[in-house]
Every structure is written in C-alpha cells, then in structure tokens.
Length: 381
Ligand code: SF4
Image 1 (cartoon, rainbow, N blue to C red):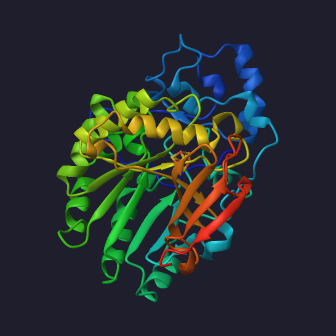
Image 2 (cartoon, rainbow, N blue to C red; image 1 turned 180 degrees about the vertical axis):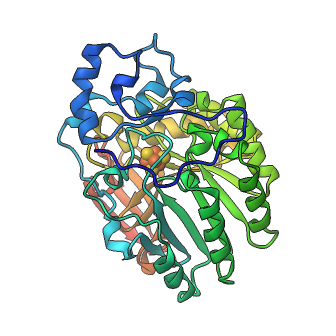
C-alpha cells in the first residue's frame, strides 16, 4: 500500500488542477504486458505521477527522458546499494529533524511528492514501514530555537509544497518567530511536477511575500532535471515565485538516460539562468537501492559536467558537482590521467571543512567509498 498525503494541494481556483495517478494500469500508453512486468517494481518502489507531467512524455520514444524519470524499470530490482546511502539516520537529532552541517537543519515534514523520481535517494521515506517523517514539526522547532547557530532551515521530505498552504503558513510563522533563522529553504520538485501548485494559489504567493523579507529570505531549491521540464507554465511558476519574493536556485542529480549529455545539461542550465533560477548543485547519484540503472561512474559524470560548463555563460556555470556523502558534501574538483581531486565543500566534522583529497583515478567508481585516497590536505595547511 502506498502512503497517502494528508494534505491535499489547494489548487482549486486556478485554470487547471492536476490529477494524480498511483497505479500503472492507469497509464493507458503502457501495454498490458509492460504493466505486468513493471508491477513488481512499483510494488517495491512506489509509483506516483500526474496528468500534467505524464503529458510531457513522448510515448513514441522508449528512451524518452521524462519517461525514464517516472516510469519504473525492471532493472531497479537488481541488488545494488542501500536504502539510506548517506546514512541520514546518523544525523537525525529528533523525529523528522536532521542536523549535519552547523548552519542548517532539515525538517522532513512531508512524505509525499508530486510524482516519484525513480532515482530518488529518499525512496525509503515512501515505504510503509518508514516513520522518519513527521507533519508535526514542533519538536524540530524547539530544537532549532535552542540552537542559535542554525541560520538555515530546509523544509523537505517528500515535497513541502504538497502540504496545505495553511500548514506552510504556520511553519513559516513559527520559523520567523526564531530570530536566528534567516533563510527558509523549500526543497521542491513541484515547479517541475505541477507548476499549478504555485500558480493557482494566490494565498501561497501572499505567504511567500510576507515571510520572504529583505533580510530573511525564503529560497526555493527547485529540482529540474531536464530542459523539457522547463515548459511555459513551469517558467510562469518560477516567475510567480520570484515576483512573490523568493530566491530561486536549482539542484539535481546527474542521471543516466535523463541528463547525462553535456548539451542537454547546458541547455537546461542556460534556460535556468535566463529565468532567474540558476544552477546550484549537481549531485553525483548516491548508491541508493533501486538506483543502479540511473547511476554513472564519477569520472564519466565529471567529464559530462565539465563539457556542459564550457557551453554556457557564467551564470549558467555556477553549479558544483558534489557527492552528498555521509561525511559531507564532497566536491569533485578535477580529474587527470592518474588522480581524482576532491574537496569537502561542507563537512559533518568541522575539521574536514575545506579539506582537499587526492585519490587514485578509478573509472568504475560511483562513490567516494570506492576510491583510494592517497593524500589529504587540511584546508588551512
Ligand atoms: S522530488 Fe525529491 S524526494 Fe521527491 S521523489 Fe523526487 S528526488 Fe525523491
């Protein structure tokens, strides 16, 4: 059984309300044989989509990137990776509260997304026996209030924009009552999955205007993976966010079959820079269970990323290629014939912050743990 959202979106008064589907037999473009084959996959890793996003798929192309993003694949069942690849459990300080980097606390406040990305690194949250998320953020708010070093709070999950506007307003208000919280981040793929969520909800736009102030902004950490997601209506959605006072940036993983092409990535980065949602992080895919068909070795990812960066203007080149490793955000800085050069852009342990590492080059390696580190240089050597 799939978990249900307890908070329906409030998009009732706009030009369109998207319809959600949760069963593969609701996808008429799939043949009965395909539905049968994919049934066991969606039984293990849930499927969810909506008619707006399904409408972006070119069903004549079996390799269509939007299709790859949400339609299950049999290869997901191969034994590979673990469900909590970055060991988020180790930084969980209270129910639904993660504190890994000094400045930033994560509130896992919703366990549903507008659709489920097949390569999701938090797919464990959508499983029935998982209880890491809580809609009740009171414990998190208490923790944040007691930690003056916390200047950034990321609302995540799941997707916070699938919560009701009323609930979001309550959380914004509570966070704004804590003076040391300067930035509220909304980690959301709704601008890609369902731009109408923002466009149809003037009350939400008013809340953005009220709680994103000149000195304490709300940031939208948008999640576009492919330029085809940047439809006219998605761009309108980002524009509505910007006009309501949000600062928008984009972060996404590099995913095999979706954006592992320098021209695709460069096109997306260029458009994101034009619309005021410049690229922030590009993530190396975590070794998460079910994700093998979507992952690329880091050498290949870095080469593709570097090529993409040569194709755009400065504002389209601001992404950093990072691994969200258990020990911190490790940036892949350079690769030569013999070595891979890494640096801790963020670190769980303050002593690691800025640490530079030289590793033996391994063209098959997907993740930091597979590399052999030959030298470590502290940031302030
Ligand atoms: S939007 Fe994020 S949390 Fe939701 S399914 Fe996609 S990757 Fe996972």
